[in-house]
Image (tube, rainbow, N blue to C red; front, side, top):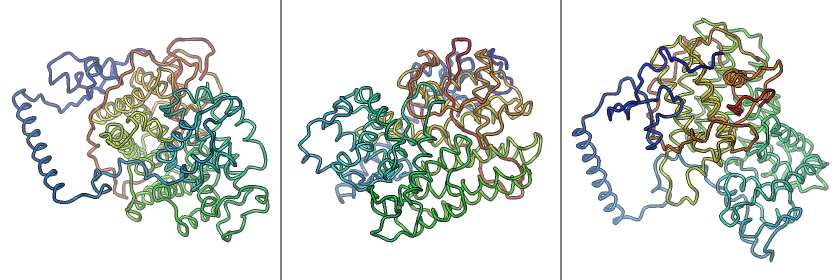
Length: 618
């Protein structure tokens, strides 16, 4: 594939972004895509190309700003008067858009008794950590990380330290790698090697108690840095955790209270029934999500296992946000089994996709309470994966395939819009973390989904000459949004966020063409094949040789340093984009239009260096 700068025929019909057009200045957005134009990048402005944009005279802009200022002043006075009359409940005085809030913290670890231990520092293989750093790390974990995977406690921090040292140090390492605690900025750098030695010993040391299963699940959700993403052991850790859970009998939903779930737990801390059930739910959730992004079948996928998960959700108390995300993955697991084993029949695939789409949409009607933007994003990621799977198996030119491409377009645009809205939300004054720090604490799967949606747009719309200009422009603008998020979150050019942003830049250097021209280079990873194609195409742009072997999938999420070189540091920018309006088109299609293959692809590739070094791989 050509590596020269594309001419963008029909893809970006307008050469000037709205900011430069408003100021009547020359714009280089076309040449710098997906980066913002030079002027917008220097001024931290939102660089958007809109063919329908018309300049607003300076006098009208001044009048509009004055009118908005008066409205804000009047609103502030009205709020102050209302506040003097009644004292509002702090919970109800928050923003009405609760979907932008993180999951409500659960009391997972009790820290009060930690002061009674009498220790001022704690040691792991010769490396000491002071008590204040430990307490700060566990507070961050309880309030920010644990709500995404609520499988602990409540349990005393003192108990974790004395009885479950592997879980204790796992939590500290996960938190310190993403949020350097104020009392000790270098905890992760000092603990990484001794913790990895501990991990290698503990991961394969039988028997595996409940706390070790929980630690491995946390490591699968928030993996540690690796030099090459092919070395990421998340799938292996998840498999160990699930087999340990089966060995303990955590999957048994009919265990009586006060009894151990398995004969083999007699010499181990079995945990409370509630903790065991939540841990088994965590095994299902983590493995199904990982399988989707790796293009592998779910580990827990038999009808009896899925029925057991439904029984736990219906008969036991599970955090609302967690239960809704599990229900989404239950639907995914059931339909993935069917799609993966049918005979590539376009009519059957299309009917199955329609049923899955309907079931996912019904969730919000059935469970209207506790809905958040993260759950919406999860549903969109699942839909896009399934659409992609069916699209890659469909014959080009069929009407059903074109319909699913349109639906995939709307789904990808909506997913990126949600991510952009979250990324540019107003910071809460009560928050102790910056917005960038909060975003870096999200599970890796969140950024896998965001990267997958971006690759979908680049492949099928930004670089596809067979579409219409409006779709090209919508796709290009949303690619810029996603690129900005990854580039801004990069702590350094070569961490994983920076590598993903560099991948987008390389893909956008390809000459536009038709996606109907060729087959996927690797089609045995369900919908994830488009990401593997993206990696291969990126290597083409860099003139790297393509070896006749399976291309490793690379994941996006946390900042992971590697030895690969990424995009030049001068391309980095911290533009805080204005919130973009969602795509106005209705994503729901009439059932009569349903009819063909769908597309499910994802797993985030890391980018390699722009400098050619023979034989260097991902």
